[in-house]
Image (cartoon, rainbow, N blue to C red; front, side, top):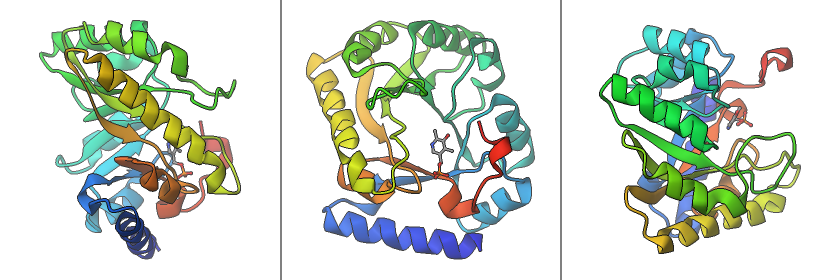
Length: 232
Ligand SMILES: *Cc1c(COP(=O)(O)O)cnc(C)c1O
């Protein structure tokens, strides 16, 4: 089932790239494997997936230990400051940085391990009260502050769009995220690039690709439904 799912998603990514004149290699697929067992991750790995996304520190660390070492691990969930130390030397990219205090902690722990951590700034563009993320308004000043920290590189922005039946309803949020990135680029901040836009999930990734997503994060589309009690 996982293989068929990945093949179907690959075809959709490719055709959406064709339609929007984008190169396939500019859209990276993250297999969101939260709550799923190692055997299922291994199947995705065997189909060629090398980017995996997790939203809990403990689960990411467990899976990191058990899975092959050429995997790029993405932390996509809300991150507590006291857990940063467990993952700074294991993650390829942290998508969910939404405060200066969290960024300071990441930089501090990264310095101890002598690494530089790549991060994205999470923006709650739809301003849903249930979600983490900084606001569009605060994004520029937050990036300016975070950019001064020594062991962090800001690579772009991330958003979690609302759950909707019709993905077109989320198009404006993807456009907004791209626009915020453009605003930040125009500020010309040292140590900041806005190369990556992490947006689009199972229900809306095609829309996100047409709006410029460079990372799409797909869970159910690859691994099937999650048991709801285990989510979040
Ligand atoms: C769970 C999760 C996803 C994947 O969601 P699906 O709808 O299952 O594709 C993507 N991004 C984040 C931040 C998530 O927590």
